[in-house]
Every structure is written in C-alpha cells, then in structure tokens.
Image 1 (spheres, helix red, strand yellow):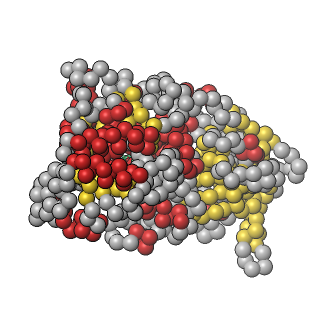
Image 2: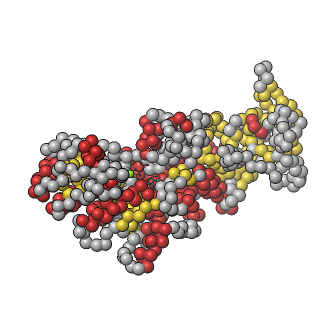
Image 3: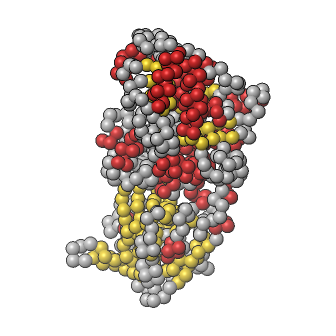
Length: 578
Ligand code: ATP
Ligand code: MG
C-alpha cells in the first residue's frame, strides 16, 4: 500500500529559508565571485549519523539545491582506528534517505549523482602527502621528536605562550628525509610528528605549530595497509576542500578557532585561486537526548538501546525506523534555522514537525492497545456488518475502507470507568458512548471474575444510531474507538518515549544517570483487520492514540508496530481549562 513516490505530495517547494550563510552565498553569486557554488557534507565514518548531522546535510545540500550548485558527500576518514565500513554504508544510506527525494539536482555523488559512491578524504592521501612535502620544502613544516606529553607541555595554554620545540630548526633536507622514512614505516607509533612552523606564542593555541601528520601503524578501512602515517583533520580537511573545488566549507562553531589554520595552510601552499573559505554555524543540541557519537556509541555497546537504529535514538536510522519521514526532518531543519549562537532546541519543535507531517499522510486505523471485551447483547452472533470509514480526512485521494462490526468487540480499558470522575464522557455503568463509525452503545452490566477483575462489559447498541445513517441525529458526548474481537489482528506495539528524563542530560554530569527507565513499553494490541496488509514505510494514525508504523522485525507470524509519536504531547504542562 506504498503510495508511490513519497515526494509527490510534497513537490510544492518549501519556502527556501534565509540565514546569514545563504546571504553570503547569494552575495558571492551576485558579485560573480565563483562560477558555481560547491559545498560538502564531510562526516567521519566513526558512528551513525544523528539529527544534528541532518541539520548540516539540509544546510549543505539545501544550499547547493537552492543556488544551482553541487554538494559532495565526503567521508572524512583520516583516523584509521575509529572508522569502519559499516559506518560508511550507514552514512550513504541515511543521506540518500534524507535527501534522496531531491533527485532533481546533481547531488555531488560520483558518476553524475546516479551512483552513491561518496568521496573519501583517504583517496587524497597521496596528494596530501605531496602538499606536506611542499610545506617542508618551503621551510614551513618540520619533523618533531617530542613525545605527545612533551608536545602538550610545550604548547602552553591560552593564557601563556608555548615554547619552541628543540627540533623546530631542523634543516629542510633532514626533514624531507625523516618524513620519507616516517612514510616508509621506519619509526614506531607516535615516535615523530610533522608539525607546521607557525608561532608558538600565538594567542590562538591552534596556531602553535600544530601537528599535521602522525605515525599510526593501523589498517585503514579504505586504504588498507598502504599508509602508516595519517594526516590530522585540520591538514586533510582544507586540502580535501581545495582538491574538490569547494567554495563554501561550512562547519560548526567549534571550528571557528581552527579557521586561521585552515587559511594558513592553503595560503602557505600558494595554490592557484580561488581558495575555499570556512563558515561556521551553531550545532544542533536537542532536548531530552544526547548527540555526541561517543555517547551514542556507549548506549549501543552497553546495550542500553538495541542498536544504532533503536527507535529511541536521535540517529537518522533510529528516527526512520520509528516512522519519522525525511520530509518531517527536513522541515524541522528548515524551521530551526541557522544561527551563530549555540542553544538547546526544544524537542517539542521536532515533535510538532513530525505530527504535522504525519497528520497529512497517515492512514487512519482503529486499534486498541489495552483491550477490554464488550459484548453487544442485541447484535446477532455470527453477523459481520461492514462499516465504511475514510482513510484520511486530510487527503481526499486516500480512499475508504471497510471495518467489520460484530457482537464481540474490544475497547480501550481507559475508555471505561466503573466509578468515573465528573466530566468523564466515555463509557460507565448505565452510561452511553458512541463507537466511532458505528453505533451508540449503553453499558448494562459489568461482569467480573472471582478476583473482582472486569472480564467483560455487556452492552446494548441503539441500532438506529449508526454513524451517517438516516436516523443518526441522536448525539452523545463521548466517542471512542473499538475493534471487532473476532476479526481483529494481533500486534506487538512498542510505545517509545523520550530516552532521558531531563532536558539536558549532558549538563548535569553523568548523562546515563538520567535515562528514562520507561522509554519503552510493549503492549499486545488488537487491530482492525486491514492492518493485516500493513506495509513497511506506510504511516498510520491509530485514531485517538497516535502515529504508528510497521517495524522491521515484523515476520509473517508476528506483526510488530512502532509508535512514532502520540497524538498529543504527554510531557506538555496540562493546558488550563478555560
Ligand atoms: P559528534 O560530535 O557527534 O561526534 P562530529 O562533529 O565529530 O560529531 P562529524 O562526522 O565530524 O561529526 O560531522 C560531520 C559534519 O556534521 C560536520 O561538518 C559537523 O560540523 C556536522 N555536525 C556534527 N554534529 C552536528 C550537530 N549537532 N549539529 C549540526 N551539525 C553537526
Ligand atoms: Mg568530527
């Protein structure tokens, strides 16, 4: 029941956002500074992408899309010990899922956007090595034999200058020789480094002769055992940008202090212009979750969640599995905007984007999460009455379906109270309620077992009161959902909630102390029979409950359904009744 191209309804362009980076890009185009805008999204394949990355993807690919440019997906893979092919594959899949609908443009993947081969910084190792040699030849880089501890000590601190390394004034020929021997594998792990010769008393510690290359005898996921020296992020990044012809290299604010180094390296290599330029924006921090890959990895390895794509994770794969659509994530990314100020984004903003999106597309269904049996004593045994219901009142093209009504039904335990409080408009002994799309029923008798638990409610239906029927004018205050007990299909429904109980688990010390122990509840639900044919990727609204989607663990024998989000925000402070 997949509804064709998921983008089809969404083709009306979302108003392109405007922000300081887009203003800069528009200005550069107006003054013809570059023939074409070229951005990149450069994840390190050391974990799965999260919703913070989604913000960066929507910004970088969004700018390329809006300004007729190109955006490269580049694996920033210069650290062999933390990177894996599994992460590379997941990144490609997640980027494709998030912006695959933007197929109308050159996405900057290799082969004209048709293949999903990304770029790899490690493909430039030969060139990056040659640029390092060029810096040595210019007297701008030297081989240093200080240990990592000594290097830290010599660097000083922001409030006091560093000290020159005793190896700073090595001759160029000696530096060239040592660098070649580092590459040849003559020295052990960490024995020597290549450092830029800048200024050990610079107020910016990143300019105090930063390390450009280090020795790592480690196999690399992409280059295998070819290298035992690896460039540092700061050296590889600007050169990769240059090699790819990037015009606007957009990153998060922590890198603002690295920008002088970015410019120093490219400037001192005296490369043909134009050079790429770095711009910084505020990273996304989202309430009630953590975002650093290191912490997300901890949740996975310590089995606090079931994997990177656990539907409670803020990863793109987790949100996808939970039932969030790419359009909802893109709207969210556009709505929060791009600024220069770090702050915590209210998770309600994300949840609002998800609800708004799902309300438009979700097929309405009836399902009872915590069933209690109802017997309609004046409805014949064995009779199945097919009632009609629209699939989505928000979408006239979504069609209609039949729902069977029978003598035995289930309703939600919550929708009956033996001794209800005032203003309780659902079912009570002697009271009436409307069953959605069906009849008004009255509760005549509450049947209990020996231990006093309610086992069934015996009711009579007003058979003249059918919804949409000729004699349906009679009104009652409450309407509840239900399913036929004999026709229902069983499903395991996983009810997810926020992973943490506090808005900023990072701010208060050990983030794992604030895990929400009730972030997953599993119920055995009864669903209307049309859900037998539930399709992956289709979104459903269980009426009065929330939005749901099929989980990948569904088998022919067992249906597993994830709650994407409840209809209303259970965490919001109770709205004052007027
Ligand atoms: P983390 O701190 O979560 O480990 P990272 O910055 O090390 O993330 P990278 O793989 O290097 O992760 O990130 C790739 C790109 O995504 C970078 O350009 C980075 O600036 C951007 N990015 C990472 N986290 C966020 C975030 N929370 N909000 C916006 N952009 C982000
Ligand atoms: Mg990083």
